[in-house]
Image (tube, rainbow, N blue to C red; front, top):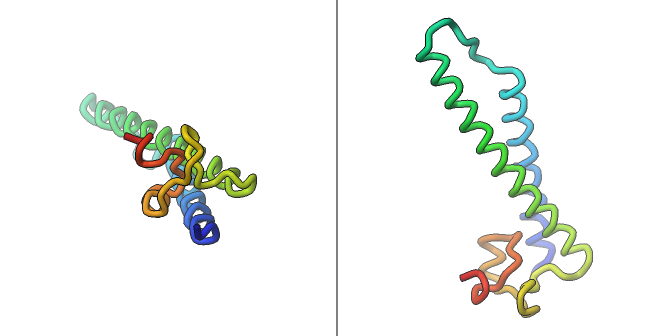
Length: 107
């Protein structure tokens, strides 16, 4: 298994998620669009903030997955299925480098 390749993928994903999280948090704390007095505009802005909150939660969860995978590389358990202990297929790790389950147990 090519651990260096997967580590590079994970480091790239980590940077991507950290950047995404920072941008979303900045926009939530410092909105670029000021609300005016129209109810329609306020409803749209609230809906957009809800969507941003969902995107933020997803990015934070994915960052956790990536960080956990990087820790597994460091402790020598990367690429092992947490259910059966067998190796996770290389194609699966190429597609989802933070996978914790082999194909059999992921289904």
